[in-house]
Length: 251
Image 1 (cartoon, rainbow, N blue to C red):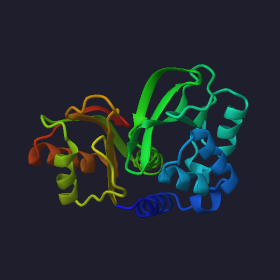
Image 2 (cartoon, rainbow, N blue to C red):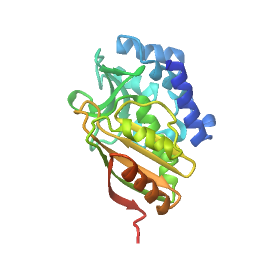
Image 3 (cartoon, helix red, strand yellow):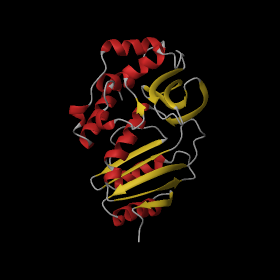
Image 4 (cartoon, one colour):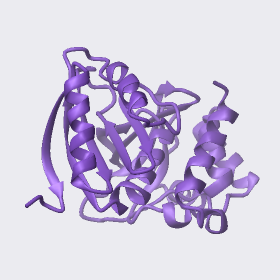
């Protein structure tokens, strides 16, 4: 699938679940995008170019509480020498929480699907805390959590397990049979599934050994809907389901 098509799918997803974004997000100027590309030292991932051109000035309601992904902030961090240019790592998000200032970086040693791995680390280096295989998946996962799952009357979270490391190859056809669609394509470490009355999102840390489990969050109109979905996953596939928490708690 071409990068432009994936970007159109991403835009359609975001505007469908939060229509007000169309009036809220603002893109960075072409000049600012080119300056960031020069700092990277090589062409930016096509998805990141789309992200900057669409919301590199303001992410609107999609904005993260303590992380600034704006082109202006990225350029300021390099100008102030908070971080130095590095062909492997590019700062894309500034963390303002001084207690744990783990900033968001691209790791260009791990490209994926016209994008690259997203990791967190301190400004000057140190241990990496990988988040998602791509920025696209991180933003879509977060948007579905914020604008759909968290607005559902009932949610639950837990772990899906399988003997097969490629867990999603078993989950995909089952969710399709239950009437769910996948709003954007993802890799083997992130699953996104939507239905009119429920949404399931699941993920596991990139770069770790791909083993057969994924943390999931499921939201729906009531506990009955969620129990039925989880029951079908258990009885109609080889997957196992462990629910750790219901929100609100079940009586």
